[in-house]
Image (cartoon, rainbow, N blue to C red; front, side, top):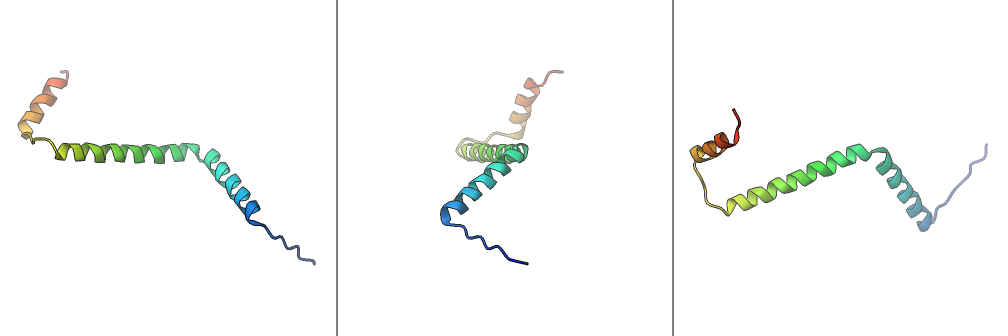
Length: 73
């Protein structure tokens, strides 16, 4: 049985890697969408927390009062 050796140059390896990544992106589109969506939500939450750290504090009662005004009975 003969063994066939294949050597790849740097350009061929890069092209194969690009093709593999493109294939994964196509096949896992929904999964990647969810991952990016979660990352964006985390970033937005961090920014909201940071902005909140620079504002005046309010009482729990004040928050409850606002929330009760928003809720429809």
